[in-house]
Length: 286
Image (cartoon, rainbow, N blue to C red; front, side):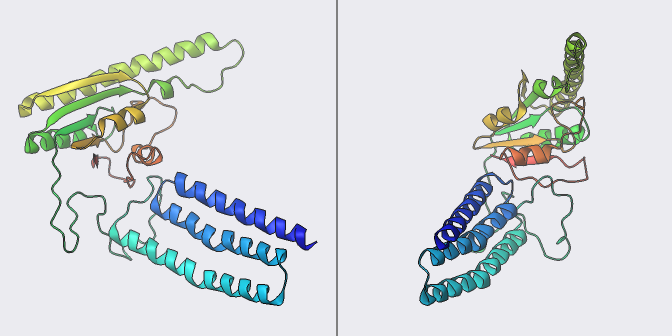
């Protein structure tokens, strides 16, 4: 019986540690990953220790395991809480899909991801901006994003690039197709892509007019591809990516609204906090 209980607790503890490790690798922000690591440290290790005690049952072993578990319960949650608090105060970004920041107004926040952040004992970092890459997505906030990108390129004398992308994969996903509906589904896919091309053309024209008015040389790259890998390729050292906060490369034609901040966070391009103000562009430094 003790062998069975030992195997049960050892397997349960190892499985919990494995799930926590996957969480540390896959969860989208620092605070969720911290939660997963804390669970592994307390629950996972605690179950493993109980399994060891069942494998070698003796009063001395149980006393040692009890002391070790008590130590874990007293230290790991407190350490995790303090690290999470330090990250929040430093300004580590929340997941883009976070709906409510319950500590807003309670704790003062820094700006961890800002290149202008001052650290004690260090000089202010001034990044060299060589390229400003603007995502030309039709929708709310594109005018503000264009204005910000043009001003940034003009200020730093940087190369200005407009990425006109059509998220064809999303637009062609029209959901389940009933029997006999393939023809109409194909027509719907083609119609959505054609509408996206027309909307994108208007956005490109807006960008070109703004760049010419500012007297800045520019280039436009047009692609029909999955946006996130394409954006990641362009975000190298010396580059700044500017995106409208309220628009994505489906150009407003997908059957559901896509949040750019959440999409960037999910694909590990940047940890961006969601915002209600569509006029504030998303700015990511390479």
